[in-house]
Length: 125
Image (tube, rainbow, N blue to C red; front, top):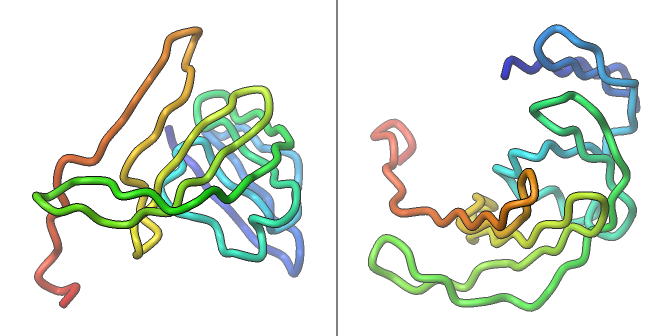
């Protein structure tokens, strides 16, 4: 999937695989879910773009209690977030807002993704 986002003030123009997605406000997230959205976006409806089809849909985001998740040989407190809408998902993010676990339904099948390891780039230190 090839995606592009252009921002003009409060409006974003997004395209996936060359297909434009209707202009949206800045409260936009993709179904890749790689990063936890900023806290102020978690308190209101959010638009999600399906990275496979480019379609957008409104969802509700609920911040749940932090949950310990084990990865890279350590247990870490992770923020649990529920996405309610046409394609619900449970997501867990570490203290650096990286997705470390995802539970969702894809094409009618239960899906669970868990991070196995994090390899830091030497330039990131």
